[in-house]
Amino acid sequence: MNDTDEILDLLRENARLSVEDISAMTKKSSDEVRAIIKKLEDGGIIMKYAAIVNPEKDGELKDKVRAEIEIQVTPQRNRGFDAIADRIWRFPQVKSLYLMSGGYDLKVIIEGDTLKEVALFVSSKLSTLEGVRSTKTHFILKTYKENDIVYVEAERDNREGVTA
Image 1 (spheres, rainbow, N blue to C red):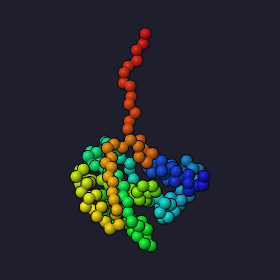
Image 2 (image 1 turned 180 degrees about the vertical axis):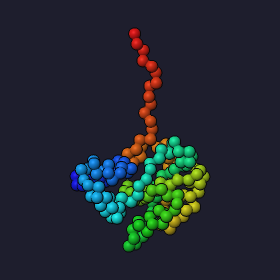
Image 3 (image 1 turned 90 degrees about the horizontal axis):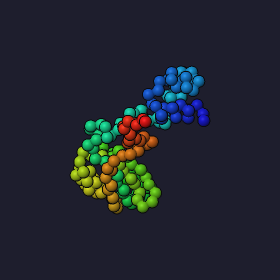
Image 4 (image 1 turned 60 degrees about the vertical axis):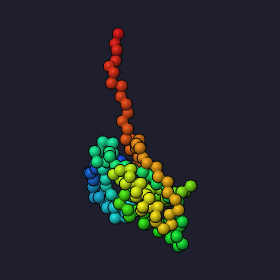
């Protein structure tokens, strides 16, 4: 593992680590660590630092409705799937967009305030785009694990032990 990969792994695990902490963990000078991080940021490898929030415990996120939409599209000549993807990812409701192999072409994760709002978005915005052949909507009911983060707490046995 090279210096860049080591620092990147540390930041993936905890983006709140200070340059000094990373320096101590990697046995590199603070200036070297700063230079590597700046290179990662300038190169677009590190795009953003963000907090991961448990949607079940955040009042505002808890009430949001999330859905996964499978979309079959007709690719455009000379642009393939990129042209339709460029149009889809611009909608503020779209949280993630993936080109897929298999039975459909694009997978979109969207978020809305109500089931009706999400359904209306799919029927009036996504399905009406030129090149969209079909959509299939799956509402996300509960998130157990996402991006290596487990959202469910292990059940604990709170009973007291019996001694004889």
